[in-house]
Length: 297
Image (cartoon, rainbow, N blue to C red; front, side, top):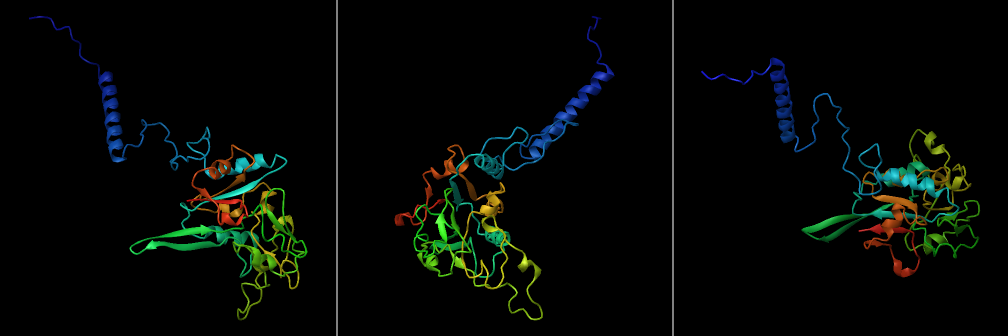
């Protein structure tokens, strides 16, 4: 009888093999169930589930992606270190879902009264039945480089600033509304001194209507016959927030990340890249107003 030189596996080896096969089978099954999602061995810490990697901006070393808001905030802080900025806004109407979050956020940020809107969202039906769709177009002030609203002001209460924002001096404005008529984008409205609780039985003005606003870096209280009541009002890219190193409120509140903001003087900034895309356009360019709000479509 020939001698059998094979050795019987030890019990420890069999246990290790069973553990390995068990973990391997569990990993394969989990991969089939989870659609190919990565599965780590037992005891390893699973990574946090994050949204798909954003195509905008570099990847942070500690995350799998960098949110576009993080990039814009970082670029804003860098822009404020430079002596001169050229603020630009880009709106991707392909991403806008018409939720009006930017409009409401603007009202809250600037304590806007009834009838005063800085960022309306225009809704349009495109096509003919049955091939129809809806298009949503946010319409802030265009901050034109050649603003028609400026030369018509009889008292010089509005002007083009070096950083590109068209400003208004509420104390100088006489409320003639010439600028409202001159603006081809209907971006200006007049403050008639109304309150949201006007006509409400049994109650007067609510405390939230008495909270001051801080447009243009100053404190303003809406009181009868005092600025800004009676003045022309408009979007100013939240200048008071920019002065504090914060993005405009409409940018941070956009749930679809459809609004971008930054300094066009920086060739590496996100907005500089976006405004040079072939699908970047501006409203009513034929008028020669040179808007600083771009649209991607």
